[in-house]
Image 1 (tube, helix red, strand yellow):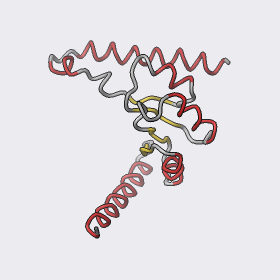
Image 2 (cartoon, one colour):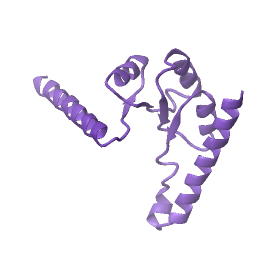
Image 3 (spheres, one colour):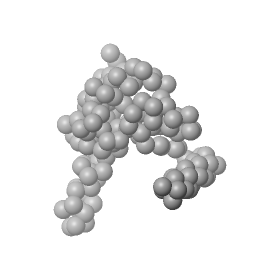
Image 4 (cartoon, rainbow, N blue to C red):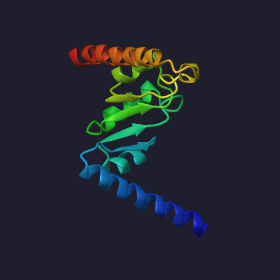
Length: 139
C-alpha cells in the first residue's frame, strides 16, 4: 500500500514538473479527467483545457453538453472514441476540441506508410469541426 501511494506521489510531482516546464515554454497543458470532480481538479491544477476521456461510451455528447452547462469556464477536449460520426455531436454539445487517435491513424495506413491517406482523414476531421463550429456559433 505504501509503495502504491509513494508511486502516486511521484506521478503527481512529475505531472507538476511537466506542467511547469510546459508553462515556461508557452505550451498548452491538457490534463485528463472523466468526472466533474476530476475536471474541476484538473482545471484548478492549471490545465488550459481538460481532456475528457474516454468520450465513448461513458461520456458521449449528452454528457459533454451537461458538463459544458455546469462548467462553462472550462474548455473540454473530447477524446477516446471520437470518430467522423460522433465528432459533429461532440462539437455541437459544446466541446472546445477533439482528440483523434485510432480513427485517424489506421493500422493499415501506418503499415503501408500511406501518409496521404492519413492526411486526407485529418483534413476530413478538420473540415467537419470547422463547419460544425460555424453552425454552433451562429445559433
